[in-house]
Amino acid sequence: MGKRLITQRRGRGGSQYLSPSHRHVDDVKLPAFSEGEGVVTDLIHAPGRTSPLTEVIFNGKKDYLLAAEGVKVGQKITVGAGEIASGNVMMLADIPEGTPVHNIEGVPGDGGKYAKTAGTSASVVSRSDKVVIQMPSGVLKDFNPRCRAVVGVVAGGGRDDKPFAKAGKKHHTLRSRSKANFKVSGVAMNPVDHPHGGGSHPHVGKASTVSRNAPPGRKVGRLSPQKKKKKK
Image (tube, rainbow, N blue to C red; front, side):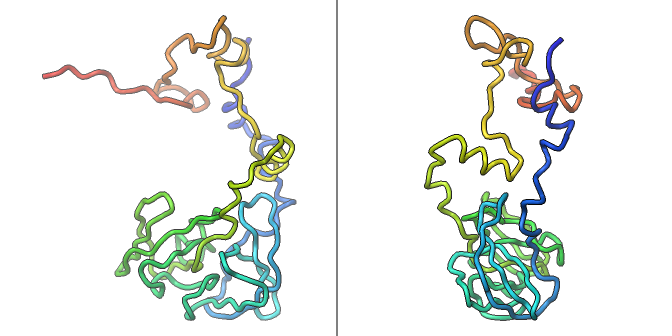
């Protein structure tokens, strides 16, 4: 009897596939209030995130935001109407076209959902009944003008320039995100471990496409292609 595929085992869930939330600093959402001003008191490392965080004091209360490029300790951060400066939180309706933004709300008041990875940013394309934003992938997406975003690019964009150098560093880095630091291909396994395993040389051994009627745990990889159409 064969083993479960790693994708099926991951889908079943368990503590080893849950992100270690006790190591995370905070949920990092935009402030709930519509207007205010705070001061950056520190820049900190956040396990499980690709970018550093800014520690901001709003009205005597500590809050955390994703660090924007150029933000420094002692800088003032405004929420609501204010200057178009890196790190400030503003409504999309008030941000000029061509301005880079990050941590964009999908629905007004949800705290920010889009463009949160280090080194990424979206760009405001046009403003009318809907604000059109070009996402980091290049896709154009419509947003409610009352949705908020942070001006600037997320800090930590050069993280890929420095190699891990050894497997241990990669293991500890990805552990905070509950991700495996290596992946073995199916053709390199034994027949008991994977349908593609076995043989005197690497080969799949059967059709690698998957039926669209397959159960959810089996429906991974290449779904069944369309049948060849006869030429007219």
